[in-house]
Amino acid sequence: MIASEPDLSTTIIIVMVFLTMIYIAGLSYKIILPVIAVTIPTAVVLLVLMVRGQLPILQQYQSTRILSWLDPEAYPDSSRQQQNSIIAIGSGQLWGKGLNNSSITSLKNNNYLSEPQTDFIFTIIGEELGFVGCVIVVILIMLIVFECIMIARKAKDMGGRLLCCGMAALIGFQSFVNIGVTTGLLPNTGIPLPFVSYGLTSLVSMFIGIGMVLNVGLQPRRYGSVEDL
Image 1 (cartoon, helix red, strand yellow):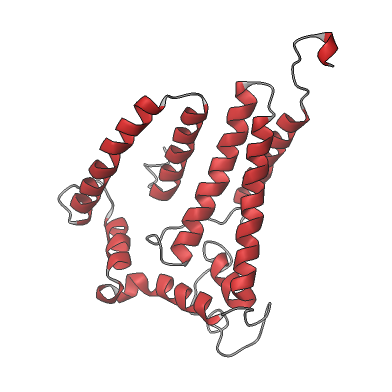
Image 2 (cartoon, helix red, strand yellow):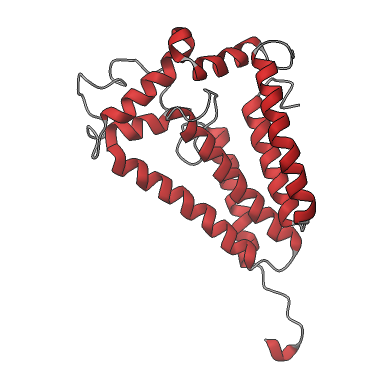
């Protein structure tokens, strides 16, 4: 259903979360390594064919986004938002231009970034708070992911462990994709930065997920005997 919208980025993230949960459930390395060895070359070949239009799986705008990422100068209209994002992050340098600044050199203030409060919020963080602000945001997200993993290790059953690891994977992969897009590491795609981007649906969904993780952490462990108590 998500793929048919079409929403390729969310589909990929859900697949990654699913694969992570399969691994946590106990899938053997004897199966994982051969699958990875076959999947990566196949994915590269399919991507090349899709971009060239020889395999009509991607929508036209999706192919254009990939091509504009590979060769921004050849697709200036499609790559403008991402290139402006890279310039804005770089212009923040170490400490940034200041939170909610009124600088005339700000790309945000001059409307070079469309809807910066959503998918490109990390760009604003880089411009206004600089490298230090970006590092702080990344560290905070990593701490949330780490805490989810630590709660998963203490979970009393496999269900709780899978829930916590799935939430950790969702936050981690989604953050990686969002930051990768704003810094030019990945093709442009619309996906929010967890707990940071403006958007009630995304924020509430993340809070619900974290609430379930905390609930797992509050559940008492099962002990083998009364003496263990």
